[in-house]
Image (cartoon, one colour):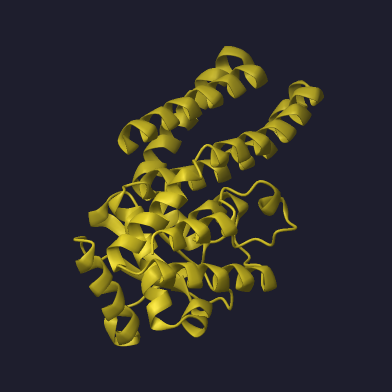
Length: 269
């Protein structure tokens, strides 16, 4: 099902880009943007995870750098019957985490230094169960592709302003306004249901729904105190929204309400 969703998403993006090209440059513009769509689809499939990790300023670590974290991730991966993912750390005081990759065999989990300082081992295990659930449910590819494409479409808006401005100033202005909205709608197309599913499945993996519920309260409070400088196009990847609630990312959050997430977890007890 997730492979089908990814194929539909890439097809929809291709159609959107071709329509943009036609609006800006007629048949020649449509042909140009068809080429851009082909390159974007290929690149987002194979390289979206690396692009997302670089945008989050995450660095890969080995076991010698943090044996406790490495061994905890390995235990949760074993309980989930998954291969050990690559492990990344983001130097940020905000407590947060995300998973990315194109398949369970090519997955990565990234955590911030802030989450290591804030959570207990039990709570961190709950968070890692949530991320392993994303990997096992195979929705990490779709989420990573969305992050890459949303960023690209936003940039295309600025290109359209320049390109359209030479032919038609109004067309360029429309592109500048429409492209970011389209990028946001693509993000919102990633159903909030996937977060509920990852909460539920991750809690089952570690057999401790309360650990994740407790962690979510702490992570939400920490994210409210400290915004994390990440592109809005990648915000949906994180376990809690890394942008402050007062930001545009807060207004159009792809994350479900915290209270409902916690209530669902506590009903599992």
